[in-house]
Length: 172
Image 1 (cartoon, rainbow, N blue to C red):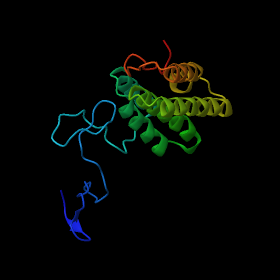
Image 2: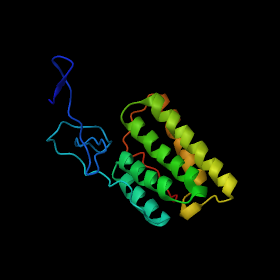
Image 3: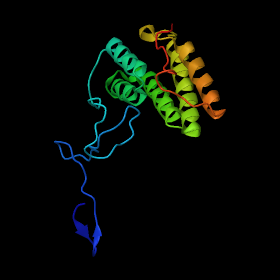
């Protein structure tokens, strides 16, 4: 397990990245849930990648289509953290939508619905403030409608398959 402290209680060793920051190196499934060490997992999204907005939308859509909303959230989070200040609410809202889909697919109806509604509100608020309803070709109104529909479905007890419920970022 790891070293011991204060008597005989074992303390788990923490996974660290090359810079010494705590990172969980356990493999994960397509919905981001940790798997046992040594299990075959889904490749993780690299963190801190600077992409153009168009690259962000395309990569996130591909991950959503594959039923990997947790990984799409990581792509949106990179845009949120590295993009221009005036767009952070947009990218944060999109990350919340992806995490809402993740929680919904994991069976967490309450958390999923809450994040879906929060993300819908964030992208709508940003679009209204910025005067842009189709940033980078994305259909903000359609995404907000999708999020609220999914929130209602999960609260009603619907089982959610992440790939089947994946939104079309740029509409149909």
